[in-house]
Length: 66
Image (cartoon, rainbow, N blue to C red; front, side, top):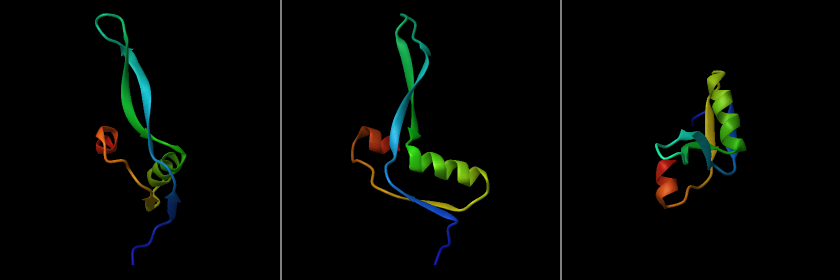
């Protein structure tokens, strides 16, 4: 059995973060995985803890990104 220091149950979503402007002056955005449970796990993993996530991801373009 695998052991984890912390496990999160919840949503994972995509944040669209501003990334400057394109050549015609429109705002450009990049996608980043986010959501409170995921953010906690990323921070815990960076601190050296073993982490796990329990949730579901959609079967669409954004789900493929995640």
